[in-house]
Length: 265
Image 1 (cartoon, one colour):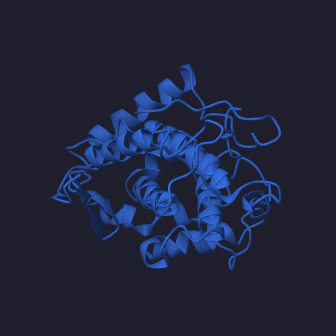
Image 2 (cartoon, rainbow, N blue to C red):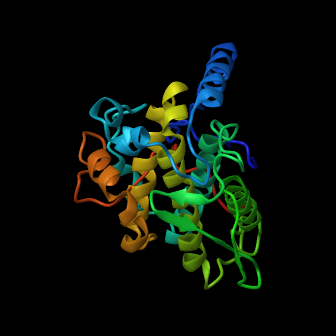
């Protein structure tokens, strides 16, 4: 997948530690692969009845975090920071960490097993530059998302880093579009690949990322409630536990603190 996790200032890098790697992780991946080869999971995004019990909602899994930090405090716009700068730095950070989270299970998200980009009973389609609806597999959809977002966050005309450059008038709408696509990726990981995430012991990272992302998006009205309704049960559970910001708060996620997006002077 595109994008490496970027370096973060030490005072904001609460969640910057990447998912576990190394020999142990490789051995787990191999074990999960063997299990999946024997699995009777159906393609097309459809899972056996056992998986439709929403394993990610089980209490022993929802309480897993990599930090107990109060994310509601972390997402609030600092008094001295420009709103667009805050949106830019956080959006870029979420992109990198959601991309990284997906990369941990990308081996299992194949065109054969995930023939559609599905979350529960909802299927997502990609729209090309001409607005043409494109039906694609989940890995194709995620690749389209990551490639398009990578192009935007590295475009100096959209995410300016040079002193004197202004954010475009359409910046907020572009950020909302990015957040919508990133939410689709998170939803697919939970719905179709939580079993693998659990086997890799990365569900704590995923939960933390989700809470931080959702709380941030709600704080700045970046996601349509109709768009996120499909995961409302998970959002309510994760955001109602300590560190989740409260069930009535908003958006959430658990990526690391916002990365630097300071314009060069």
